[in-house]
Image 1 (cartoon, one colour):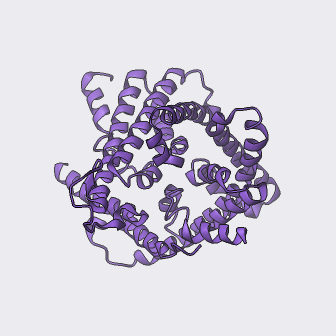
Image 2 (spheres, one colour):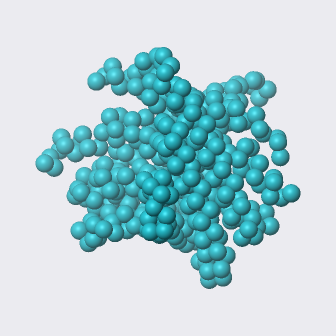
Image 3 (cartoon, chains in turn blue, red):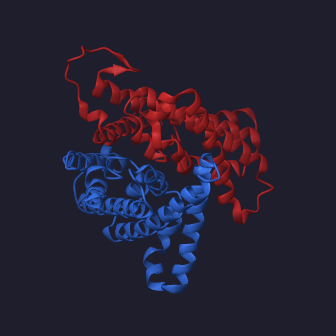
Length: 191
Length: 201
């Protein structure tokens, strides 16, 4: 039951992009085509789940026992950066097609604040366990993917629309994101 | 090239012409995430300004010591150290702001503005220009966040810097202090910004 609540909360109610504002850069940056946004969503899903596993273990088995909790930010960002590099190298070797699909997005992910944000948020879960933290990260990456892909599909339509001169580019995208966020606000109170 | 006019331009460019939020779209997550009130926006802006200033200073000083292949991880460590300092100072002295900003304080590390300036500017320029660049960019960021925070607070809460100017039971546009309001307010502010800068150019 706990897990269903986590899933619904992460995907709809507290959507990571539209209500917590993490990962806005890729959300605005790579959302002009559905195909690229699917690739980005896949890469984030992959990295976020692995990174949270690693940082959760690091935090609970090394930093906490050693009393080094204040090094959290530094160690987490290093682990995530190293992990992204490693994933990139391994994917290139093991699965070239997957690398082709996700490769370009991987370097961008190090500075995706959603990954670091979820890794930190996962530490604050109630009665947390490794499984719960990993599931939390996975659910959040689904939420990220959902928001990104819905946004990209709207933007593909927008290309055909007749937009007033002053609103072209950034403003119209922000407005669309605002309306999308308004729609997700409707899920409040679901869990 | 480092004469006084250049330095003035260098300082001013971050505030208007290359404003990090309205023009370059860097550091959008904290911009949208913490600006539900003017004070939060201002506090976040100042915290970021401090980290940006310190990281630009240090990067500019040690740039010749860092092998170019590992420069990005090195920059990230420098930035993360200062973020940890900010985190500790805020927790100790301004716990109220620390609570309000929450997750966005450690996330200053991944603010693309800071790494972007370290990589694009401080690693190529001398100390004085880097400090001025950081001050200009940082002030541009503080201004943008404060303006967005003020706008959202007036519309959403009927107050400025917690000073309420409508009666307690007045209806305000609560939407603007909720997440969608962040996107919508920033959209209209950037239209306004574009309009204003287009005229002066």
